[in-house]
Length: 104
Image 1 (tube, rainbow, N blue to C red):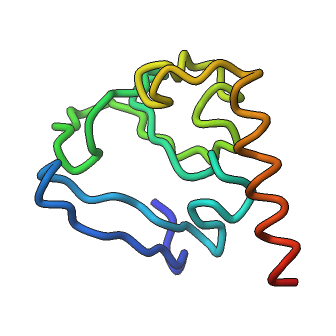
Image 2: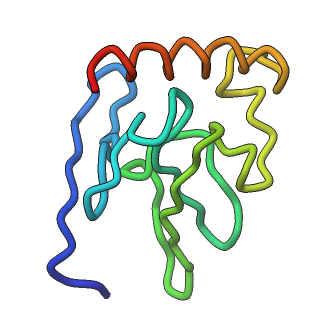
């Protein structure tokens, strides 16, 4: 168990779960429009919130940061991306980069 690591989260009634917004300073959208935290249990990425997962003894829980809605973690992100293909995400990324430049 790691201690003294800062994290931020928010409860969502709609999903009846907690959403982890940031861990140790890296937050959702900090590294692009499709970036954020995902969790896996025993190498599997559930499609529901971590606070709904019933951990069993021996389960291995991992939080991993994605910059491509899980695709960079080897996941099929079609269930989360609204059907965006990699080539369709490029305009989203460029729009995000343009927005960031305006505020730098």
